[in-house]
Length: 198
Image (cartoon, rainbow, N blue to C red; front, side, top):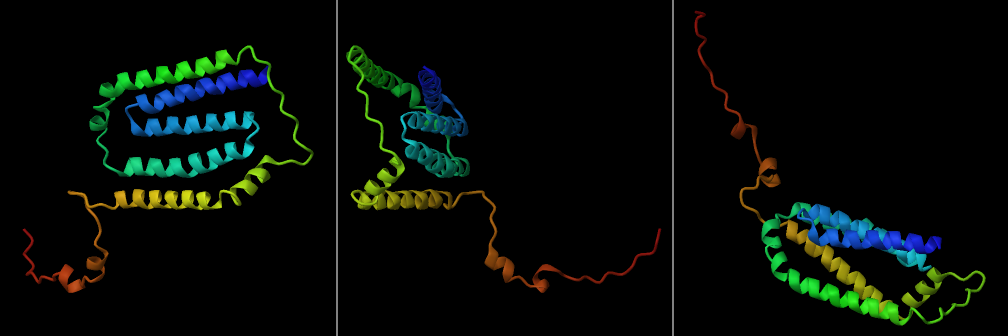
């Protein structure tokens, strides 16, 4: 009973945060709502006894990817109004897709409402789903895991390269020019005759 209450609280928060991601006009607020949705999703994973996935969701997505995303959002000159122009144009299609997904979820829930719940056997003593997941991940799916790491690396490099572009009317330092300066080029001593005091 308590687990059901916790599930509904965090599921409602997750849906509200996901709606906030696409409705907020400020991209920083949208990113913070995305962080909230990741954290609530991690809680739902933990309720499903997938502790490793929940912790990885918090550490990797909230701790690394979202921080990088926030830096990219704040460093790039994003025209928010131009990005929001197509929101109302594609809103009917988005509502239609949301209704189809809600209908599919409702169909599955109502179809299985009368079925007897299947009780999964308790894990053996000393069983760790993190160890089992790691064993599968680094044996059967090792190449896919390395490929995902390379894709994330390319995404990080691309995000950094986007911020290094040349922008007009932006002041920046020219280190080579500063180091090559001489005192004779910067300071000019002028000898002036003293004027009598009035």
